[in-house]
Amino acid sequence: MTSQSAASLPSRHPAPGAPLQGAGLVAAFVDEKGGIALDGVAKHFGMSKTQLAETIGVKRDTLYRTSRLTAPKTQARALEMLEILGRIAGWAGGERQAMAWYRAEPIPAFGDRTAEALVKDGKAAAVRDYLDHIALGGFA
Image (cartoon, rainbow, N blue to C red; front, top):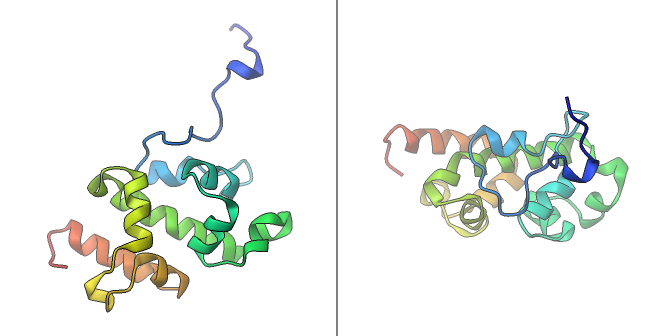
């Protein structure tokens, strides 16, 4: 086995803009402790921590305080967002387009609320169920 310098080893997290979808999107951001590495998520999607906090529905300070980064609510919201993005990235044309859909596209079945608004209200399971229904050929 040859030794490599740390600089030549692959990064633990994907490069910004690297195409990911499905479970790979979630797995790409799991840190060594089993949590979601939120700094990596923000960087990958070209967002500031403030923008990511708004997107997952937590206060701005949450992503700037180490103790709050690992809080169950913060981690759950980030995981829910990544799971939904992973499910639709292939349909949307990539994870950046999936993020745009997540944040802005009204879903008629939910009174024209966005996936982002539903996740913020604790309804991520309903969004996942809806996406599963669509994937199986159901009507929107």
